Length: 294
Image (cartoon, rainbow, N blue to C red; front, side, top):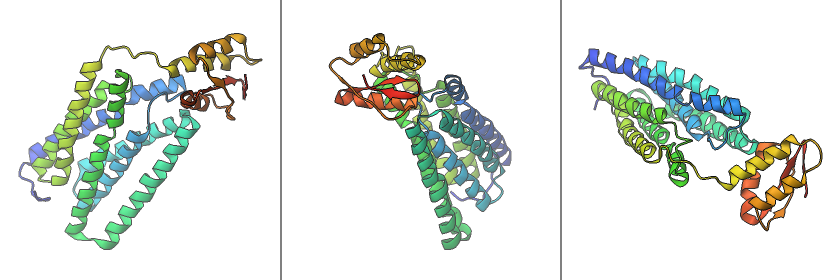
């Protein structure tokens, strides 16, 4: 496919507008999830990787659109996407456990700053004209595939837990529709780099909806992390000494374990660490402003 031939200007306009509209719905689909995070003040089992990767992909497509020129539709939707994804990441950072915040910050520094600046410098210094468009196009294809593949971790979690709690249906639906529309836009525009990744996007989107149909309505079995969370919440409300009830409850949930301390007063970090410690026979009891040994 070439990159400059416009055989169907009216259809290109229609699919460009549709692509912007549906992609906006894709960006807004996780909004209820982040409202839930805001209300609960915790990120629970949600991950930041899909949003960091999506932000990076939007940045790349804006760069590609400016280099290619006359790609208003790509610039408008990806600019909006950058704003929305940044808001999501900021909310995640505000309510995530310390370890998750650190990991997200490192990932953003490496990908959204380091890798993007490297791509920018290399393409500006080593390529020009049509060659620069081709190189950028293939880079965009590669990272668009990563965006579509990012929810694979969520799909794996759905299969493992037999619950669709962490995979919003409307996000999967709009991803599928977006892939169809942007493939059509790229095909009509004869732009291989826009059309190609959306084939994979369609496959992943359909796969997610199939998973949703299979596991929809199935109740997630209670996990040890759920029970631990209850104990931690009970203990956190008690500003005095640990109660016997807390200790007994811990023993019921984790029989024959050694209760140990963790030097961190952040309740989310304690919950996160407690879930890990269960594998080696350890647990903690959280108290107001400190962690005490039982």
